[in-house]
Length: 239
Image 1 (cartoon, rainbow, N blue to C red):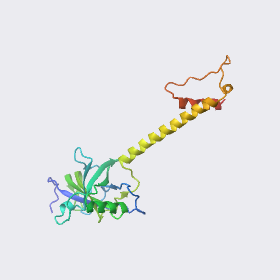
Image 2: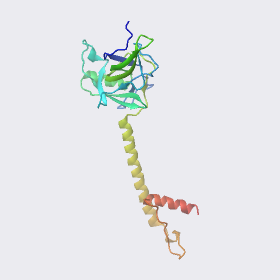
Image 3: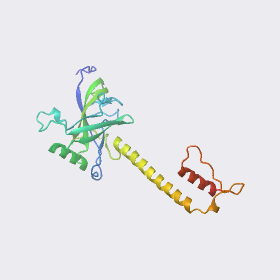
Image 4: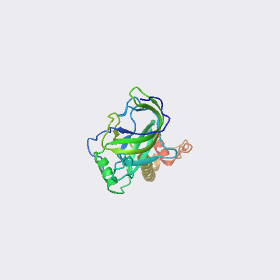
C-alpha cells in the first residue's frame, strides 16, 4: 500500500461517540457537540487529526447539517441538509450546535431525537489539505477544511463526548445582557431608596462642620449618588 503523503484532497468522515444524558434534555435547550478527538487518538479508519488542524471555510461560521452523510448516499430518501451546523472554537477546540430548519419530516425527526437524547453522535466530512502516513495505516491530518457535519446513530469514538453544560455564544451574550438589565434595575431601586432615606432623615443626624453647620463630604470624581451614599454609610459607621 502506498504510504506517501497525499497531495490530492480527499473527503473523509470522522464519527464520534457523544455522552448519553442521564435525563432527557429540556425543551429548546441547544445541544453542543465536540467535533474532533484528542490528537493522540485514532479514529476507526486509523487516522488522527492534529490539534488546530480543522478549520472552517473562509468567511463561514456554519456548514450544512445532514443526517448520516445522506448527501453521499445515492439511495438515501433525502440528500438535502436538515439544517446548519453552527461552529465555534473554545480553547482551540471546534464545537458544534445543530440548528435544524424544521422543513420536512426528516429534519423534524432528527431534531426531536437529538433533543430526546436518542441521537447523541455526530460525524464530520472534511477535505484533507495536509497529512502524512502513520503507523496504523492511516494518516495524521495536519490541516483540513470542514465541509459538513452529520448527525449519526452509529458512533465510533468513545473519547469524544456531547457537552451537557456548555453554553453557546448566543447564550453567553444573552446572559451578559440580562446581567446588565438586572444591575440597572437594582441600581434604580437603591437610588429610589436613597432618596426616601434622605427625606426621612432628621436634620440633627447630619454631620456638622466646625461652625456647627451641616456639612457634606464631596463625592469623588465620577462618583454617582448611589456610590456616594454607601460610602457615607461606611464612613459614619466607622466613627
